[in-house]
Image (cartoon, rainbow, N blue to C red; front, top):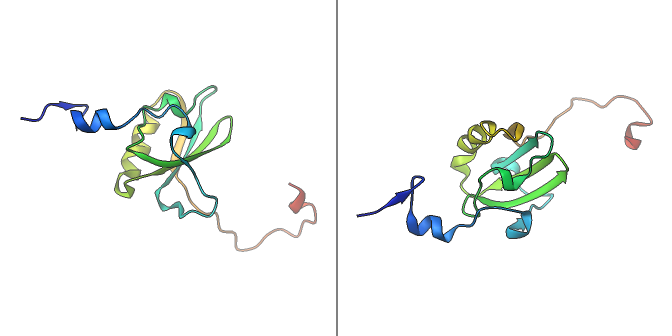
Length: 115
């Protein structure tokens, strides 16, 4: 008989830690493959500790500024489901899979590099 808590066997819950800060996981590499990454934009004073995420779910992360984080999900098959869960959180303004922005051309603006 297996007793489950939040859909996970008790041993799994005990082995994972609630994610309180990025010091609990490795830092997200700037050149990492972004396929399993999620960009989170927080409402006002939200942070990663408000998301109910665990160290079993998240492989790496990086705080970009006071309201934006990027997290890398351990199981790439769970990225879409995790985005949907994050969007239900009252501290989250937006969450989506990380993507590259591709521009066919850049404007001819000499001050663009200063932005």
